[in-house]
Length: 501
Picture 1 (cartoon, rainbow, N blue to C red):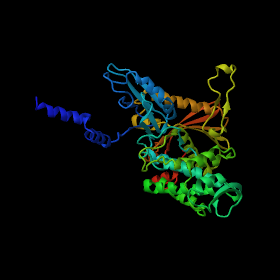
Picture 2 (picture 1 turned 180 degrees about the vertical axis):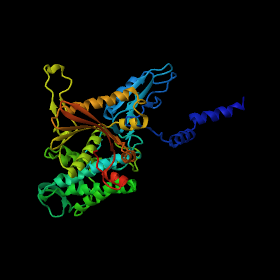
Picture 3 (picture 1 turned 135 degrees about the horizontal axis):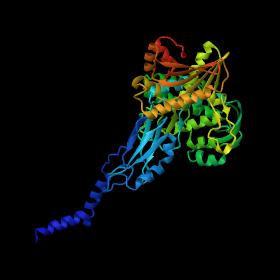
Picture 4 (picture 1 turned 60 degrees about the horizontal axis):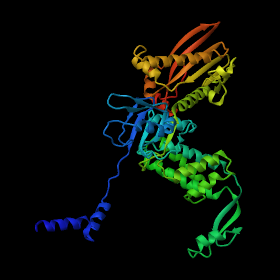
């Protein structure tokens, strides 16, 4: 019995009887370092294979495998994010347990994924472009960032900060700041500054809160009208430009798009070289955004871009692990790129270009019963008129031409063949709208520059057919266009080629 007593007393002291032992034990437990759990980033390719989402991070552990009752809550809480990135969720039933698959659509970008149990962000989802980041970067750069990525009002996306090239979001930021600098006009503005010689109205409340506690008796905060182009905003812009330039230089490396954007940032910094950089405060930017007089779209967009930089939410490819949520519709980008190629061609060969995105090619449909109409108008993407000839171009961001070339028509799936037939019927419907002696209807599909170069040199980058009807000839054309910049075309062929047959 005596041999057991000291053991019980020792155990009792360790469990809480002694004043020192338990404190040291619990303190040691509290101070023990914990390795942060790495949140997973799911990756997919636009129009690519579906991605299976595992339930471990999104639903509580259970004896039963699978999602259990949390599948519906996961789909519901992430519904808005799925729609923003054009992800189509699918709940697949199985004998053992149901699974969730996300089918990527025609947008690239990144979104956070929330837990179906807690609603907190526990993972991220990144859709990469099928034709590579380099092709997207060249197109964005040479089209003047007209189809810039759209930032989404979602939390940060875990793990995406280092997976996205720095120019994806740096390009739109620089474009907005450039437009902001162009929009600044000289005029009288209310300015606040700390002055030794008072001017205008002294802000005594700020003087009592800021100058007096610091014993800066001579520093008087004043508000006064000043003639200039908003020097404070110019200081903020210079600070943002220097920060973006540093990120592009350190994270972009030799990436040609990042290098060109860094050069643009340098030129913009030269415009505001007369002022010192100053990091804006978040409350100041928020006040600017809420100011009723901020009616200019350029000013509003520029101030919003400044807020992105202040938040230090990695602009991609940089030092931040997490990145901003964003999306870019690739079909719109592809249409803009084909339009740029067409305009470049017409500039040398002559003609007039009309584009659907501006409403220049719309043909209204007048239905006898408006309540049963399924389509309000026909809208070809691009129309080129040259004298008595018309070319209708419908840009399709699909891999049909590459699949036909590699697999052949007979080996394509029935679903893809039906999609290609629908494209043909659509462009033929557009061609029927125009009265001209020579009408050409072109379906423009994307190809990688290397693939397009090989097909172009062998003459297989296009295929044509002729339809004779009503005394006129209709040329139907399926043509591959390179997804990349004009500089990439010249580098691939040694010269700038003619795109049309």
